[in-house]
Amino acid sequence: MIRFSANLSMLFLEVPELERPAAARRAGFDAVEVQFPYDHEAARWRDALHAAGVELALCNVPAGDLMAGGQGLAAVPGREAAFREAVAQAAKVAQVLRPRNVNVLAGCPGPEHDRERCLDTLAGNLAHAAQVLGDLGMGVVTEAVNTVDRPRYLIDTTRAALDVIDRAAHPNLRIQYDLYHMQIMEGDLIRSLRTHCARIGHIQFADTPGRHEPGTGEIHFPNVFAALDELPYDGFVGAEYVPTGRTEDTLAWMAGRRR
Image (cartoon, rainbow, N blue to C red; front, side, top):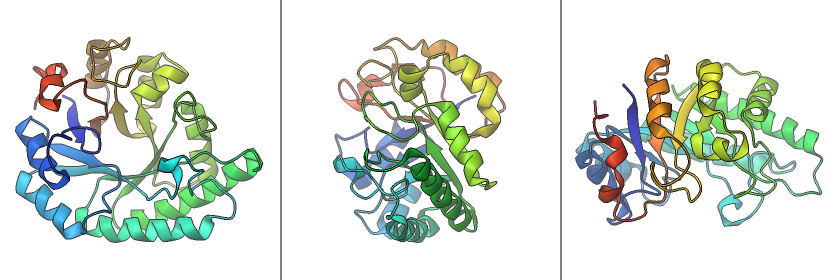
């Protein structure tokens, strides 16, 4: 049966950040995700996770100016040193929090940069992150992101994500497969999950349009979850959506699926 994780950067915003692991556990989650766990001392996050009895399934390497609308770090030529500093910061925190996977956001290089050079830059940076974090026992993933929400995002399909991982040629790299982004960009989710299961390190979901909880849009989640139940996927499936109300009131999709 699927093991679900709750993305605490989007869910349980009704309570302070360090209280969200406990809120997620009360709601039935065994694991959580935190996009950027760098605003509190790592020991405080560790204590909150341990007190709640939840695992950290995923966090991100710092992404520079990306979340503020900038280009990010990982795929921009000339920002390699800044990316390595970000990996070092992520590694320091990961040693304390022990996430299962750490995600590298490719970002949105500007039109002044040649695409092939950006892909080479991203591949080199992915290989570096995979080595550093792999030495600590963590997997590294990277995800394709839709270009409706994020224009110019460098990797926007499953094939593009796999191609840059192949270019990086490091065994500690897999894709983060986000159902929301891939429904927008390519659809055919179940076939894609079945085809690429062995190369998927983490899965996230939200319905579309709107990026809200399952049942608010066009994705037929009962079928998708049933297909995931049949696959040899051993990672977590992360709820990363914008709740339409209180988080606890948007969890009907979990009924009968708690381990």
